[in-house]
Image 1 (cartoon, rainbow, N blue to C red):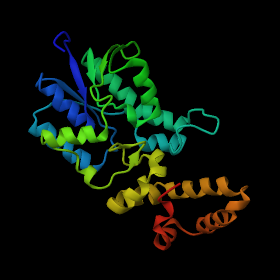
Image 2 (image 1 turned 135 degrees about the vertical axis):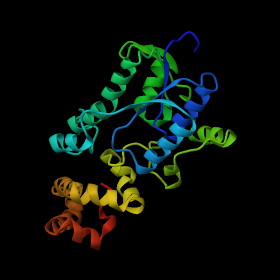
Image 3 (image 1 turned 90 degrees about the horizontal axis):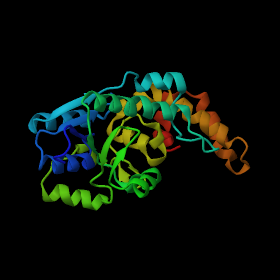
Length: 270
């Protein structure tokens, strides 16, 4: 680490990045911290981030996108599916990740001339990360990003993470005490309106713990209408799902508010 001039730690203020941040700070208290604020983080994350930045006196760079999540939705629709039935990337999902995360992060790292970037990436979080782990390992030079990358937790499990947090009595994001959804084996504390996580129970989580955010997303931003339309299209040619098809047609004729008052969990899964 000492041969690098401008190391930085990625910190989303989730449990994994808190562990990495704690590890790196044992060797360099003055290390720069990059927080990619997508502008749609959970309220808990904002409160926790401000608390840690202040208490740990972090040299924190806060990267923000130039395009908002809602502008992406207005232009491309909700990023519900990462890929279509042919395996092609869906534009809304691609734009969401690129505009809210990749571009702000790259710009911030370029501004500080980062030459070593620590992340809390773990291989179990997705198949893509598993493939990347096999190909590059936990420490490598990225030509695409123009700096070295280090993933100290690459081979860690969730149990390993929590054992470290308990051992060193690290504070953690209170979202983990609210039964946040588990995606591919990992608990996520990312963007609260992420529609790719609907199949994992994202909307049920919002409905139970953040009713105002649930109402904003499902009713005001009309995600509920989108979900009903997707179901109608999905079931209309499947004879064995004719009852589901008719049920969705019935709900479409009602207002979202009325549907929610009758059957609030109808939108919990897609």
